[in-house]
Figure (cartoon, rainbow, N blue to C red):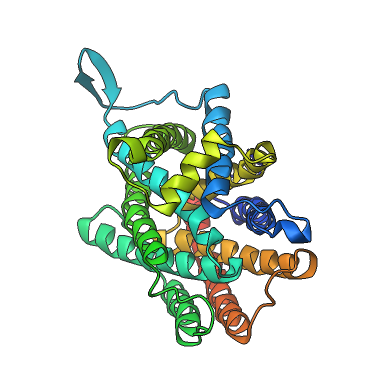
Length: 362
């Protein structure tokens, strides 16, 4: 993918740069398409845009791996199922894909809430940072992950949690009440549960797949995204038919149904906008599964990159799309995020030296 050595700091920076660019595009396009028609914007409803953008994201996330044939999986152990020889890794990669199928729509729903892109990212990304540290603790206890988590990584987690706390403490009570919104809290909880299982599985694969066989993240990504696509499509069929099958008349379900039955005039541009999120998926997974790094470190790099991207997206929306101006709490949170980045830089320097010594002795 890049002309740098696998596991090197240079490769990590390249992945982060690409991740940052496509996440800024994702954050800005969400606010653009949900903007008021009175101001010249498309004026799509949140769940209406969700349908179109998810379609675009899945087309990229599954289309590219299929075209490039990344789904060919080399496994040292296969299991016979209904006469088929299936790599045993599929039994945990497919569940990871199902979790991804939950993460994809909940991410877009969070962005569609009446809060800034920066705030949405702080809430979601901060949760995943904590999950990543817990996963490291569990896998160290299980003997799956044999490296130690550096003190600098733990300090980065601490300041990331402080960044989340800043928003929770200084929430504008006159604005959107996140805590008392059923849709907001339900979406966030679904996001956290799905990501918890997904991060554990990704790190299980990263820490065990190289033993006795070839380690390659591309087949993992391909199978996971195909499973995610199937999950989203099955869910879409159920949601679309829910008013008829189960007499469910929730506003969000009706919006999804109407997005299909009566497409927005600019639906095709909504699909195009979703392709940026599809590209984000590539770099997100490859950062999470970056060679030689702890789940804590990889999770921090992944989430903090998107948080900085959220800041950039918020500023762009403010300047060009009549978006909300970042508030004091937003900037204070960003400050603590940058402190976390500083600790991550120290951890990366130590890990790079460690890997260089291992490589030299090998």
